[in-house]
Length: 280
Image (cartoon, rainbow, N blue to C red; front, side):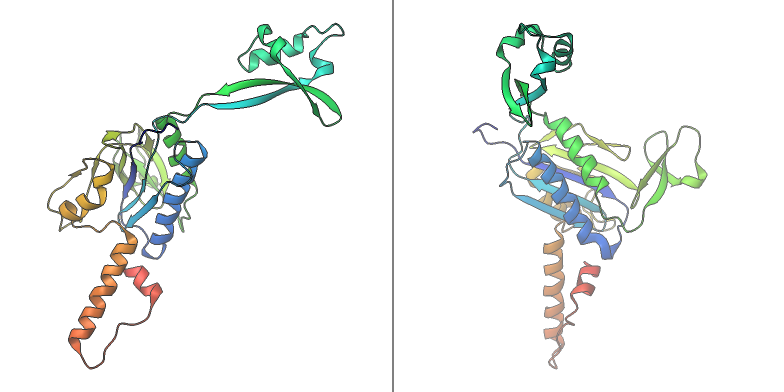
């Protein structure tokens, strides 16, 4: 990646109410798997800051410094044993020419091929360059992987109507509807690279820049996100939602301690971490 500052990335999946006992684990898995895939593809640095978000109706992740395109990589492609690749007088065999064509090269590459030991034989290798992944294709791969690896306690099936919206259970499928399998019906997908929408898709949804806040307390709906970095603040200000699981848990704990102190009589909140996680 270049020395220029790359924009930050925000990905959110907006769904119906997630299982409360599994929420934190789902959020952490979604964020870590997606970020790790971007890093493996060279789109995000190894030291990128990864911030997970998880609320009852959303899973999201913010990743800093994501490139629009990964750097090209120099690779060495093993072709075949020299004994198979070259004739006795050093000319390329049909097998070698066929292999070169398969990797996007031709006979002109033969003089530049390198010989190196390969086990008990000597093989030919081709120095080549692999183009770096573009963000749209790399994020699609990362998103697919993140969803596939979610530790979903129980999968449900539902139908997407011809307009792409969830319509009901798979048992009432109609012509033209598509069956989707996920932990809960999904209603929205956000993918922002800086302020630009990344054209990815998941669970029958196309990515955009709109999400939703609290069902009843949100000041506006939908919440139109300005960019990746405004996500948490806009959800708090416009959607009445604390998107961060950790921040929301800390606020609940703070309010419990405050109410206990107000009640007096030496009352203190229960020391029940699992229960606090569940109500968060």
